[in-house]
Amino acid sequence: MLPSRSRLQSWNPDSLLAPASTIRAAGESVYAGVVGLDNRIDAMPEARGWAGQAHDAATGMFRKATDRSSVFKNYAEAFAGALESGSASIGKARADLLGLAEDIDSGPLNVTDQWVVMIDPAAMSAEQAAELQKQAVALQGEVNELLLAVGEADSLTAQQLLVARAGTEGEFENLVYGPPSPVPPVPGDEVPDPSTEEGKQFQEAARAQDMATTVREVSESTDRDGNRITTKTMLDGSTHVATEYVDQGLPSEQVYPAGTLKSVHTDKNGNFISETMTIPRRDGGKLTQVV
Image (cartoon, rainbow, N blue to C red; front, side, top):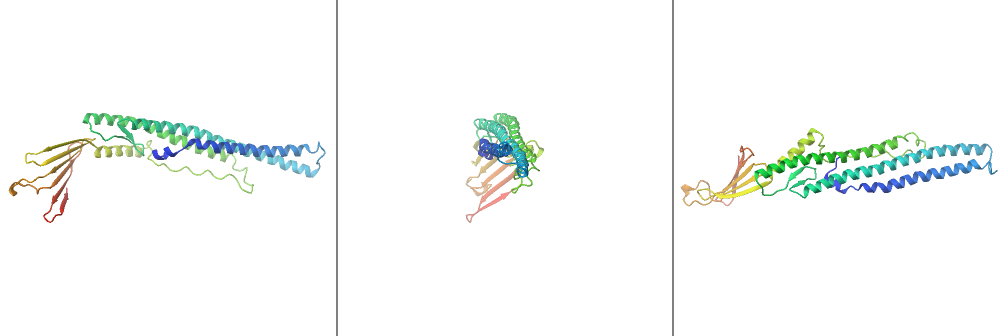
């Protein structure tokens, strides 16, 4: 699976080592116990302790038990080995990805919970914003590569566990407790897969949305009538220009009532997107119009 950043931070691949050791020891213990009984049964005729048809039947039974315990030992060994190799591969992939994300966070960029590289909110020029956008795109490729490595390590571990169980599929069918329980299915991805077109589009759209809503520059001025103008320029170059209309004195000179606020939103190419006008009413309320 492809985990979110917060999910990956909570993973502890080293926790697989303890059960791996327990499973391997259990397999060896069962095998050693059965083999010991089998050897003692075999030795009874020489010691004149037990012989005859009953002994022969017991010998055959314990040989079957030895064969089956050998299969169980091999299964336990394979399962434990899959857990140990998974701990190593997942642990390395996890450390590499989280390490890169922390390095990115320490600079003017940041990595979201969905593994999208964004630009930190800060005052900057258009040139600086453009340069940081290039860096974000380049680092996104590195993040994606390491994220896919985490997913691959997790999937490979699950496959190895399935292979270990499949090798004993028919060996434990006649046991009272049946064969080992099936390995649970791998959970679905928590974040879009960046190796797919949908995943790439998600990251691009998320970054574009963030750049269109993060302010990089604020300027204030007044027009010839004294109205206060505040211009907010976003990281992508789009703008929100807010004009607060003041009292002009004579009603004939008042374009809008004093206290009116007009906000015009244009995209990074200067194309009109929307206009919002909030006009105070005589009864104390406000009228808002959106175009």
